[in-house]
Length: 186
Length: 186
Image 1: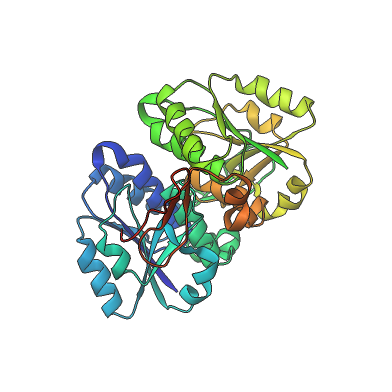
Image 2: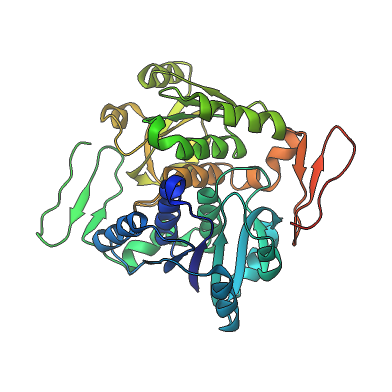
């Protein structure tokens, strides 16, 4: 399945870190790109840098028009999931979403255009309590892949220059390129 | 199981929104409090307001000393999980963590004190790619409860003044107190 994330409502003056986290979560949980409504070179540079060092070909596309992206994606046979705390229960729609070969996940800010509720194939709630678009995206993608992306997916598909070896204490990091393995105490 | 979250490394000038998201995720995913190293009245006020309107008795305790909290929690019979991308695989430790009646989840910032790796009962990685402490906390808690908190837990235990009814299109919100049900189109 091909997954892309569309981030609405980014305001550079206050959303830099949240949008960066959304981008990092998108990449780590198997999305291939984040489309950003708005422009923020600092966010893009920081995500590009992570992809360079940690592997994969995740990319950020800025300045998109959300309605065009949603329409084009659907016309190309993809389906669109809008994450909102008002939506259907995650567990009720997940099986159906999993049958789509291409999924766009739309992540809003505090206010999203009301049209979006009608244009999305599914409005999906990751719980009906207020929490976080970062958390909602992570849990949605984790459940979408049934946990597989987290457990084994990323590193095997996209070896990077840097690789963490899971360890009970401290930090063990393999650096590709110089043949050495860094690590030791934290 | 009793769960508390300890948030390290909050810097009011740049972490306001990330720490607020950590607090909201803590509450929505069943933690009973967030202990904050540092002070931030704006973050606390915003989380108190959510708890007032949406139910439950989640609380924020500011200005804690992390080492004292970790020590006291362990002396009282609790176990401490430190979320770090360098730690053991989530799936390898979850069964063991679930056997603890009291769990403290420590969520760091970019740098955490190196002592913490030794003082925690488990250093746990929610994947070994860089992503987000908000996402890591959400997935850890979601998996800890085996998804039950998200599906059915919160609203039944903690009815609030406001309650969202999951719906495929638009917003349906029940307001307690005036007997009316708000809602309709987004």
